[in-house]
Length: 377
Image 1 (cartoon, helix red, strand yellow):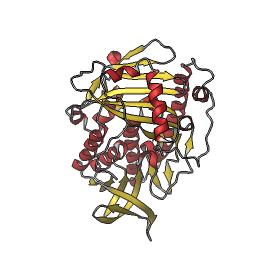
Image 2 (cartoon, helix red, strand yellow):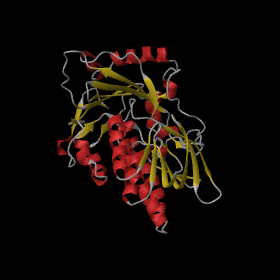
Image 3 (cartoon, one colour):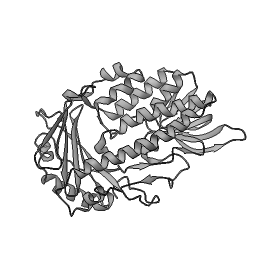
Image 4 (cartoon, rainbow, N blue to C red):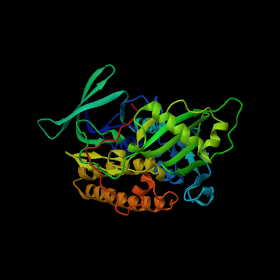
């Protein structure tokens, strides 16, 4: 299949790029390795999410999808006394708890309606330049293989990395992981807490929030070397730490306790934005600590900007491309400063390895060859 742009990754960033490019009249293929049929993390959206969704023309579709509004955040951070942050004064309105797989599928379908070609359950395996300037991308599907020829490639594959790349160019600043469980509402119970709950503890912090369809997501955030690699050992430790919490353990009155946790990489990093002429966007280029709740917002914004840089290149201008690279560097530097400010608010455990690492004004640039393990052994 011959296309102008091949986008690898059908998450928010890839879909945002596909919508923008297809609207401009380019022939776009969007390759997604799943069928949007598995649980996805990144389910809390800030009020500001409405701006890029309006720009992409999907705000009304989002509003009608049954996502759950959240009025704010309650946290124990820097103090054992709960603090409330209500969105009532936010000019963008409320925040949102979403079914992330449903949200991603909605964006991909919107791209299709704009003219993009969507390939589900398709994994890009190899990219290389042909005899001419075009890229050749070999991909695998359930029904066999497919070969694309494209003028441009956008990698929007998230933290995992794209085809042919192991990621030594990553500049990452921590080894944060999230130990995540999805809990089911007990029969006959009705939750009355619609806010996101955040609670610091000596080894890290807890995040929990209700999701649509009677689910709750529960996550413990810590460094990969501070949690056992074995699933059973980690499970025992996490259940002990959960019982020691003030706010988070209250969910267990409404939800069945977790039976297992999965581990996801959540480290902060900046990758090279362009590799061999292939643009990166979203978590493929820049990844934030989940404490910021900016992951999906960043993905939508950078997806549109990556698309704009390609449109500028087609028109013979490289200014959009240079601005895209410079802006991601600037955004990441601002993020590091903001992250330091928030983590320094928590001073209750000065001897904690986890907190000492995050109170350093000059975060250590970690060995790029070390990859954060995605799941337990």
